[in-house]
Image (cartoon, rainbow, N blue to C red; front, top):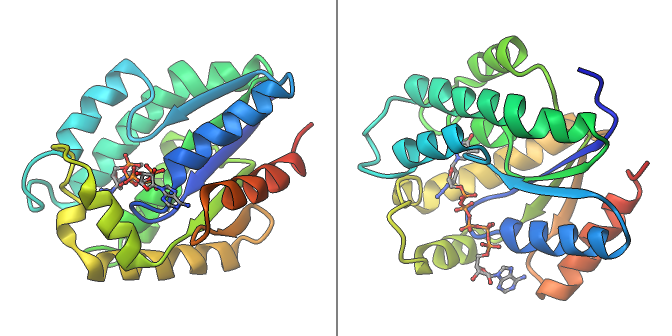
Length: 208
Ligand code: Z5A
C-alpha cells in the first residue's frame, strides 16, 4: 500500500505523559489545518481493543511473555490493516500513543531477553516503523505514582513495579541511541506546556 502520510509514535514509561502529549500534538496540528488521526496501542481498532482487555487485565503472570508478543502483534496487525495503513495511504498524519517499541520494552526485556523475537515477528507481520518516534523521558518513581493514581482495571503491567519502570526507561534510552534518525528524546519532567512546546517543535521538523 502506498503510504503518503506521516506516522509519529509516542513512547515512554507508564505515566510519562504520552497520552496528554499525543492529544496536545493532535490538537495543535489540527489547528494548523493538518489532517490528523490520533490513535493508541494496544487497541485503536475494534478487534485490537478486544485484545487490549485480554492483555492489560488480570494477574501479572496471566500470560507468558511469548504469548503476550503474539497477542500484541495480532492487535497491531489489525490496527495497521484497518486504521493506520488506510489513514497513511490517504495522506493523514497518524499520531499513535505507543507502538512496537513498547513491545520491545515490555515483552522484549521485562522477563528475559526476547527482543530478537519481537523484531522478527514485527518484520514478518507488520513491516512498518513509525517515521518519527518521540520518547518522553520521566522519573520512574513519578511515572509509577501517576499511573497508579488511575483507578482502572488495566493495571497488569503497573503491578510489575518500580524495578520494571527503571529498566524500561533505560531500555528506551538505549533504543533511542541505537536509532537516532527515528527517535527524538524529550524531557517529560517539566510542566505540560513546556513539554508540549518541544513535542510540537520536533514533530514540525518531520511534516511533509
Ligand atoms: N504495553 C505492552 O506491554 N506492550 C505493548 O506492545 C504495548 C503496551 C503497546 C498500557 O498502555 C500498558 O500496555 C502499558 C504498557 C503495555 N503499561 N502499563 N501499565 P497505556 O499506554 O494505555 O498505559 P500507560 O503508559 O500506563 O499510560 P498512562 O499511565 O496513561 O501514561 P501516559 O499516557 O504516559 O501519561 P498521561 O495519561 O498523559 O498522564 C498521566 C497523568 O499525569 C495524568 O493525570 C496527567 O494529567 C498527568 N501529567 C501528564 N503530564 C504531566 C506533566 N508534565 N506534569 C504533571 N502532570 C502530568
